[in-house]
Length: 312
Ligand SMILES: NC(=O)c1ccc[n+]([C@@H]2O[C@H](COP(=O)([O-])OP(=O)(O)OC[C@H]3O[C@@H](n4cnc5c(N)ncnc54)[C@H](OP(=O)(O)O)[C@@H]3O)[C@@H](O)[C@H]2O)c1
Image (cartoon, rainbow, N blue to C red; front, side, top):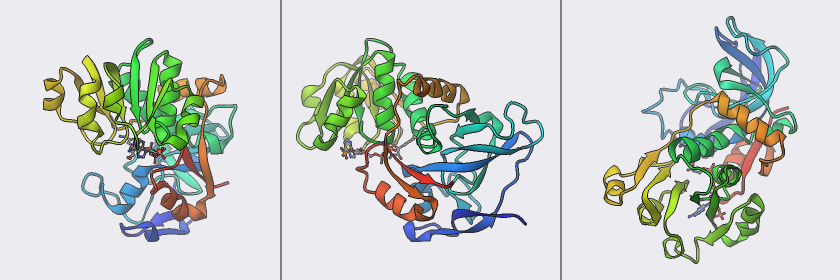
């Protein structure tokens, strides 16, 4: 049996359960492609799956491989996969219900794989799919944000937030973001019109009548956000499903987004990157073998932009 290097977990638990080891090299079935992983990225959901938080909802077969971002090169195509060919440089947010990309190779449905942006390397491309798709789907599909509107983004300096700020600006919206003081210059550089230090200022004291709130924090921010949204506006959470009763009482809509694969959106995002309008911000790059340290850094919840694992 052909093998590859992968970071796997044999049991759920803390960072110590991550094992850099030999694993079977997967093969693509019908409609799937095999990607030679060049880079993957670390997302908070990786830690959630590792801890076992999703084990009731998603029946993983252990040992399993984390990592639902990939940039790499098509190594083989399964029968019926006709759009992509061996050698194509691609990126994807693979299905979270199966083995991910903390590995030399990952198998992904062809329908979830897009050509990567041409102007950036695999390290930067791997930092895009999961968080940029989340930001896109939250702002535009759930929030229906349009030009001239105002959006408040909680957690604007994080992986999702960094893309959300830029995508909202590209759309022509006015952007208000929350972050600690050290990230304010960074957020202005991304295009934020107003930044709020959540350590010193209550956003509800200075923000009123926004069209959309994108909440990537959702501890107490959900309840505090309803009152800053204009009647008919929308609160979008990417964590807990929000209370429909509370939203109705405020005369607003409330939505929950769990990111879905979407190659149409990945193609649009690639165009924005290649035209220089959308930047990828990376906090740190680790080799795959140091996935544990990368996850521990992610667990601080105060990184800026993305953490990437380099495989090749
Ligand atoms: N539903 C979905 O499909 C989906 C998809 C992606 C992510 N998520 C979830 O969304 C959350 C964010 O993901 P991410 O990848 O953006 O995380 P991340 O990159 O780890 O977020 C880190 C950022 O959060 C900021 N932050 C921490 N506490 C804050 C607070 N109280 N107010 C404002 N900002 C604060 C930090 O800024 P400072 O250093 O300035 O504090 C830091 O820049 C995670 O819980 C993740 O699981 C959900």
